[in-house]
Image (cartoon, rainbow, N blue to C red; front, side, top):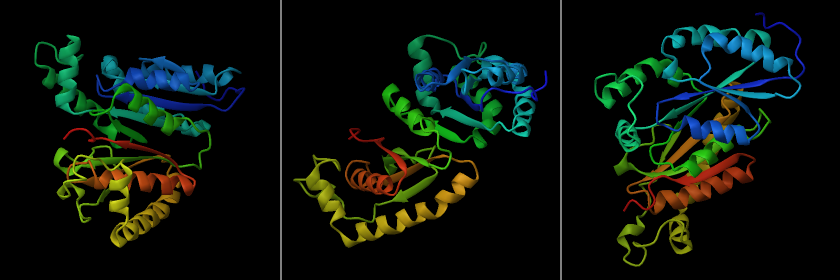
Length: 293
């Protein structure tokens, strides 16, 4: 089929993919609730036909296609299918769902389902094979979300932040606090280290509190170093944002870390998110490691 047939409306296409067990179904449901027409497990060889039918419809303006390793050999045709769309004026945004092997193994074991690629081997062997197949897609994805520490509500909020708005000139961001001792978030586009600030952990009155408590937040933000850092880091974000948009990147994850992800990073992430929203960015603030210690 040719894609040059006349279409009733402009069409947005999102490709939803990622690791098995990482939350593709939850992401797809979130997109569906946002008004996207969702097709699950579409063979890439049928992508052109699906796009043509959607463009000819007066009802479908946003289509999301879920692709995963259940397609197996179909993945060899995916790049070719995607390459045909920009030529007819259709841009594709790719959402990649990621998670750690440890978390994925635990999810598969709790559901008592085998990994689609493990065969007679271990779950972790299936995960390694899947990562090899999906490597190029992950490297070129527009949005990468690590769901290792997210619940379904957090994941829905991140998907909504990335895909809810229609304005392609608006950058959507997630500001994520984290603790370095638990590892740097794998889906971070920018990482800020605020361990140079005085640590409320050493104050017996502040130690049991978090950066969301006003007394901790005011203590962290009261220093000249914190204010200077926020000014400079905010300016850096302002500098790169137009470039992200020019390159078609509409979603950015900004990770702010301290030692445990409880005091300094939480307070700084909240303040940075507030500043970004004042500057016109759609910013969601989440705290990855809050409550872990």
